[in-house]
Length: 166
Image 1 (cartoon, rainbow, N blue to C red):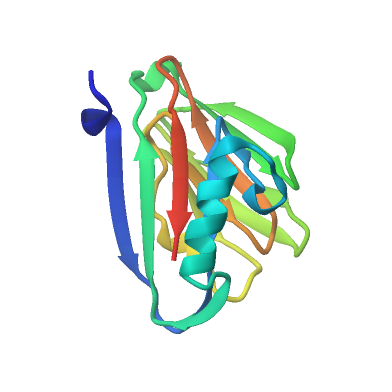
Image 2 (cartoon, rainbow, N blue to C red):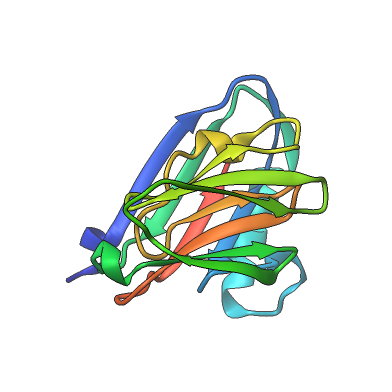
């Protein structure tokens, strides 16, 4: 399978004022490209500089690229990280399961099912994570930057890279 058939693109309209920036998740971990000497960091720094990010934006578009992995749902696990520490690991289930996770700004609530995981409440102001829908593909993630939480879908066939930008 070539990379074009493995790349998923999503675009969402966000209403109101938001901080626009690039968020990059590599192998399930937030990648701090601004403070990295990694070869990919230079390109991300250049893109962020040319786009003058971070900056405040009115009614921006959230653009999400996901490297799609291949795994059936019985092989998928959701890992929840708070401030880059693993706090919960759950296999996808047929029944709906709601649970809460503490972040730096307060409690976020998630719902997990056989379809994946979605954020259902968050303490931050803009609630972008609620607008991301369900993360269900290996390598897909939900990220709440203000609360420093992320949920990542793991499974056989693993994802490659995931980048989100406003």
